[in-house]
Image (cartoon, rainbow, N blue to C red; front, top):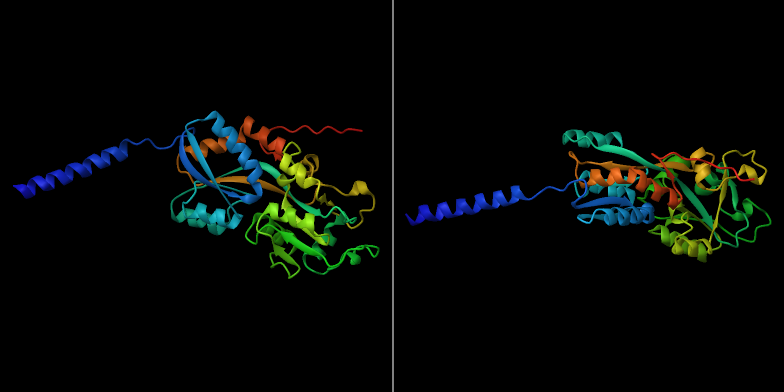
Length: 310
């Protein structure tokens, strides 16, 4: 009899625990708690988006994990995060992995973006063609004197944020045919570290995400801009005049005349309309796209008007 009572008591505890779990509400598009993965090239803009979202939705808590793009994608694949922000779409292999899980991830383009090149303020060679940049990154050109015999600078060091970052992958695909960076290139671990390194080293050229230098209202970014110069790029070797070269301004990103443009995506693995879906909708909506516009990137879902000032 005592054994039967003990068994009954255990069953009641299990049933009560199951009911309690079942009664807990799942997160919704505007409330709950989740983590998302973010390529840390986009930390400034994501902080702004999250601040606005949390201001509107008091019962939502989204924790951003800022990591190199490769690590953010791994977190998405192993279900550590619901959503990932990056500057590429999922590969065929990654989509096949989700297919085996019977999941169909959704990809939403939220912005047009660019990679910016920066140099020390004392560097006078701030206009490069794409072929010159390719030769620098591939170590065919190793000295500033090969670009300008009158240069007082020495050997060129190329610095980027992280070997697994979206910036590094993009430049490898764009300029190195996916090959590894040569010995004159190294990773500084983060975009702010790239900015600091360039500010202290006259011979270096840095590769960063443009949203780290594009929001002129951000006091931190204004401080960085006083310590570096942004390089102008030309697609053609026939470029002669300054007007043939472009910096990563919004108009030139929108028009595609700046050569190092790319897209930014939110990729979701949610199988239902949860908090990740709600946040993605917010970023793609009017308020979220205004934040993207202010940050210096080009909104993907909002109309853009370009005004020529003469």
